[in-house]
Length: 314
Image 1: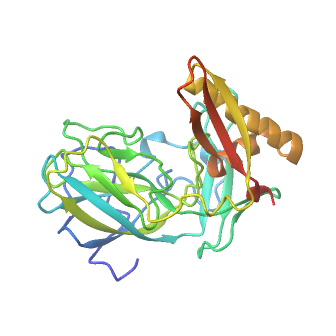
Image 2: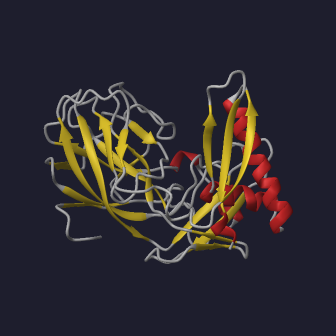
C-alpha cells in the first residue's frame, strides 16, 4: 500500500451488500486521503492460475466484495460525498469470463469461458488477448457507493441512486465522483476494480483485477443530488481511438433489442474477418468496445451503435 495517504484500509475490511447497520472501519475528515486495498470481483475465488473448473465452482454469495465502510465526518442526508480518484496501483493480472445466465447475450452464449490476463503494472503496454487482441489499459473502480437509507441488506450488484455497481469506466484517475448521502456519515465503500472495460460491459465482466486505489474524500453540504454525478479531468477515449473504429448498428423501437443486434453484428464481423471464435469476440467486445445510443428522437426507430477500436486488432 502507498504511504502518502492520510489513511489505509486493507482488503480484509470488506463486506458483501449495502447495509447502513454495518459498522465503519474508518472515520475521515473532508479533504483527507485514503489508500484502499481491494479484492477482485470474484472475492478471491479466481486467481492468476485459475481455470475453467474454478469458474464453474464460483460461489455467487462471495462476489463483488467492497472495502469499507468509511464514515465521513459531518456527512448528513442531503449532502454529497465527492470522491477524487488519485491513483491506481495495478496487480498485473486479471480475468474476464462468460458466466452462464449473465450478460447482454446470455441466451446466445450459454457455455462458461474464462480468460486470465497478465499485463504490465506500469500500464504502458496493452494487455494481450490470445494472438489477435491487444487491449489498452485504463484502470477504474467498478463498484463504489454509500449506504442506502432503507434498512436491511441490499445486493451489491445493481446500481442505485447512492452508487453501487455502476461500472462507469470513466471513474478513473483524475475523475471526481459525487454521490448523494442518505445516512449520517455516508458510509463509503468501494471495490470491483477493473484494468479495462468497454462501455456497456456486454458479457458481464471486464478485465477484473485487484488493485490498490488512492482517493481523496470531500463533502458538499446540502447538495441534494438525485443520483451520482462525475467530472472527468480530460478526454475519455484517447487511449483507444487513434486508429479509428469498426461500427455496427441495431435499429428499432426497443433499445435493448437494438443493443443486442449491434453487438451480435460486431461479433459476426470480428469472427468473419479475424478468425476468432464467437466466444472470444464476445469477451473482447466486453473489455474494449463501446455501446452508444446514436439516435433516440426519430420515432418509431432508434439507433444503437457498437464501436470496436481497430487498434485492438493491430
